[in-house]
Image 1 (cartoon, rainbow, N blue to C red):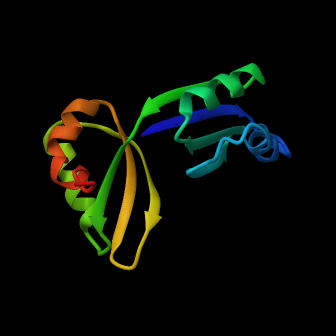
Image 2: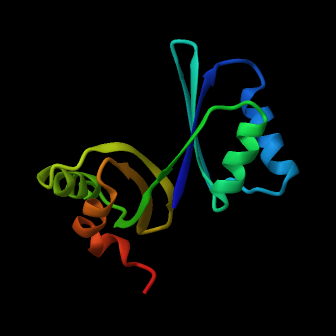
Image 3: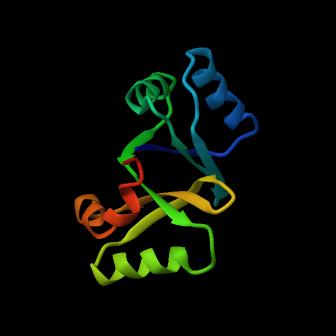
Length: 132
């Protein structure tokens, strides 16, 4: 899965503008997280058509960084995120961001961005192969 990150000056209506641009071209946002620090807005979007969305946002003068994200399926109970975080740590893989993408009664799907994606895929293989 691809993640788009937008870093820009915070202002009233920023999220309205971004979601309007994407909505007008029928690009659906699968997940979003946003925050502000020091006057800068940080918006992370998971979008199935990330390439088209990135191009569109860049055309509208937004600075966009596209990166890969691993989606893992975990049991929804305390300590599961700690378990996979420790697995990545032991493999010297840095977690750059993590977000809950979806949550069911007993399951949670997390999106994780790391510095060594292929190594992380090997380490977390048992948590990634949920589509089979």
